[in-house]
Image 1 (cartoon, helix red, strand yellow):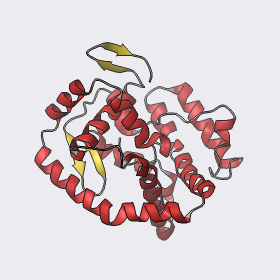
Image 2 (cartoon, rainbow, N blue to C red):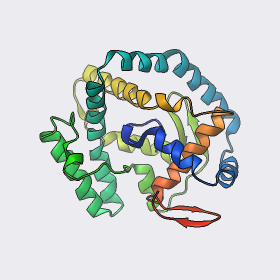
Image 3 (cartoon, rainbow, N blue to C red):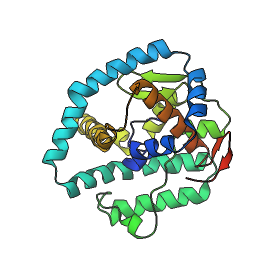
Length: 243
């Protein structure tokens, strides 16, 4: 599960991550994160490297993109990549035994890929098939009993865990873009996907305060557990149903 991914929609981007984090007992989750962050020295170095790349390259490009692209077209492009990710959702739904959810996500993909013009328009949403939180192979491994492992900050990729980092390679195989024979098209599409994801995070830049490394780490790990538990959050005060 990546924090910077098109599967966390735009599909629920970091606005939802921050909302969830800020609405929970932060002290408990922060202490748990510190216990899991056994590679903090390495992770901080990678975070500062990624932050500089973002500061001087990704963020300026994202700002310029929003200024040039009309809002409807910008949303349409984001919808296309979100729709492609439904294939990954369906595969992992099936691997986790979530057959009803697989039908839901598969229906969204079929409707939006046809009537929605390759996903440019989210027709399925209007038809009552709302976008789900999304599934990835990291969540599948969690369902199979594999633990998170230590928190990792990967260069140019972002936050992850020992379980989720290699899982991204499996998810990449289920993305239709990975099977395109046109290398230039494939790479250009991936770059645009990354850019649209960064655009979805612009509104959150103002939220992060204090130690930004800790903010990103705690948000990622909390969001990770939220997805694994399908929205059921456990803390010292008991169980909370889906947020």
